[in-house]
Image (tube, rainbow, N blue to C red; front, side):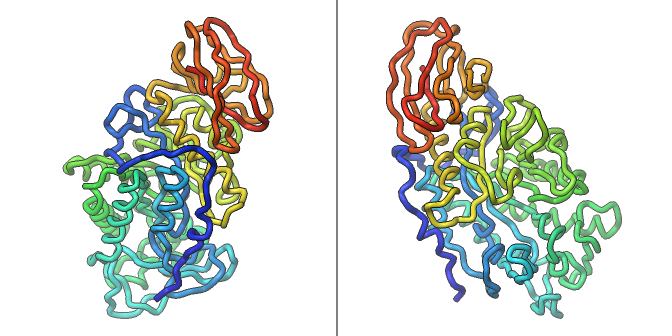
Length: 458
């Protein structure tokens, strides 16, 4: 019996004081909200703000970035992970896929890691490069797909949405994972030879078309497995290079085609291509949602998230901005008040840690997304001296200041009468009433505490 990866049980400590938030089961399927297409809706007409932590181990058991070599890999404490998310009011994560059963890790360098289960059975005859039976790409492994459905279902019962990562491209590019990949010719009994470079992305050759057939069969099986669940999103591939554009566009359309004949249609996403990718490729894609990288000014999704709407739901993910070394509550609230959803790349380090800031910041933003009429609020940075503001002009405003401007003005000329004021301490999660203000003019607000703060004006 493999050792249980129980780090989560040691770090589930009380989160910041953001109040109770009874989510209930996830509703869906999600679709783009017509009144405010920066967000999804679950069909109730309300906007659904997606926010949460994700980690490499939350689907297949694997040793990625863990210090030890272990085969079979340590079993992940998935229930503890859901407890951790629920305690912090998170409602979204990426369900990670690893394609190879073995690879040599980059961190810690030189340590061989293992992963299981996989979509296909290892029946042989003959041994693969890792010494275990070869894969039969015509025979799906029920252990993999049963786990897929069960983990998505368990998350949905807690009100958490799951983006299913169908393919993973980083490992084949930057480690020796391709040597052990099921589509490498020595590792399957079907004569499939994906690509000597390990990219196997929609090659316009006879073999490339055979590879695509097996890929599509796997995607179809995944869709069949989870289509009946409400809390599903799809991500085509994590960090495959720019060479994958045509292939990813094809897969997005393929999923749409398969889902068209199904009871439910779930959103499909495309995330940043590494290396060589461009954010414009994501915006030009047929995807419903995207995760960009940092970009260049004036579109800096890390330091000054842009408010410009370019036709896609944006899930800003620290994995594509910093990797697993950055992100905090200030970044969360900047992104939220600029009309984006957020994801945080976790290491699940025990609290207290710098990662607590982002964890708690996401939960706080999530709670407030349910208190405001987000379906009718859009970024309006021009109304606030801080530059960060969600507004339904004349009715409701949520203004964020990053901590460097304790006194600022808000343009309330569109509002009439007396407006209520509530201050939100981003650091502690606590809120307190402020003195009501009159609309009809620009008003000055002074934060009643130090550090980053938000003010809700209604």
